[in-house]
Image: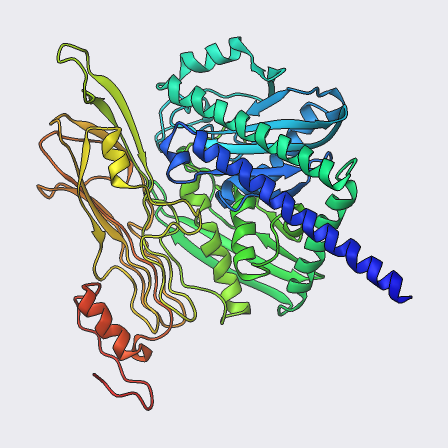
Length: 562
């Protein structure tokens, strides 16, 4: 090969990498548009969304850095379902497609997926897809109390929702008639369509700039480079099979998540054979969501710096027997599938900790501790004679994450979902609730060489004196996050009123208007023996009020106590 040929090849590779990075910036602008245009606080404040660009075959080429694994990784498969129902050849400019099918979308009816084709010079060249969690979809609401999907709200199959950029007014009317807050829900659907539109405009501009007639060559480069990099990362792992079991609270009885992970032939297979059967409550998980969080758990440890797209995701293969709680078929109740689904990275870590113990953190709270409150109130400025209005407050909060192999766990942090804790000021603005306390929970992180992340304490009440209901969907109340390699377990969580009355951790409860509700969040597990903890770190914990109990530790060799 001549110098000119080598130089030419290097420039071609550089050009592809520049276009790849430009594509990522396009989807990031797509996601930013969704956040800024969203009506619901879960999207606007917490980032409970996903956004991505797909090639004409339905392969995800790039995702935004904003979003949750449950949305992004399941949406990666859902676009294929859209193309099966509506082949690209039959799409037209201005078409808008939509679904909230839990089995072909992202796991439950609250998540609306919108897909938009991109046309350049009359030819379909790509698709943009996005997802966000809407505030209400009818039915039982965001609750574990459903018994089948028909109880859970309005089911929207994959459909052509708009033509020439205009929503179908009949479908809009159906949605408005079946949700409790039509302004927020329809507003969020508009924001979903708008963000895809922005993504499409930026993509066409990029293609014009680089003189691209299609994304075929660039897409193939992205997919193959990512797959090859992931296969190389897998090849560095020990080859073999590992098993783990994790018991979680469940509903009326505990649930066992049984995991088998095999590393062989450049791929990782994760199988959940032996996991407990599905239950007649809304905590069942569609397979798409199981695959999404299982893949994410693997990717946290193996190839975490490799771009997340259809190429890298293809190296992780997930299976679960149909009828188990992690592969519940229609019409199973899946309303709060995150309760079990967000436990799956910890389940995967139980296997990987045996294969690469130096990389894997301890277990954490994992499943979100969302505070969903509903009731009626008199908004500021309302006429005293006006009838009370309904409020729905979805507030995202988190317990402690597990300690890491080389540092303490993160406190009050939403791992693995990645959503942000929501500011109490926002929640107080849209509801009559007031947060009297929101602080770290002392002694909740499991002790160890590295301490588990702390949970938090939240105390809330209705400032207008009326009753309100909460829908609890909480795990780690009976079975704590386990420590790793000698670290202690994290503290379990609980809910109670200020008169000492216990509040159930799953299901709907009424908080009387004259009472305050305290939510005590779980902590993450510790990593390594507590006797090996740095004395200075322990003293710092005590000074900051993170630890109140006495712990016996031995100083590391050559380390003096202070």
